[in-house]
Length: 119
Image (cartoon, rainbow, N blue to C red; front, side, top):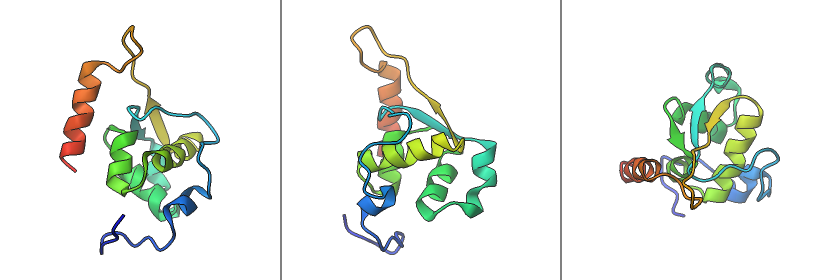
């Protein structure tokens, strides 16, 4: 990943999760939609940089994949960070319903694709 002036991160990406590759709490699918809670918004000034960016970004519903794209981190890192914020009641998760084949509904995937294209 190339760093630019918008990314003040000085630690490697894996340090954001303290080296964890799995979330402590709920393991969220990449298409899960997230929304910031009132507690999350109220705690913005107390959160670490990446946490605050995620909560602020989730003022409107966005997917875990969109969070990864916004932060410029691998999907696994975004999943761990989001799961941590969910465990602390800073985010609400909206797990999508799946079709009989176990895949996300088409409208969920279309919304995700649209969101990623606008990044």
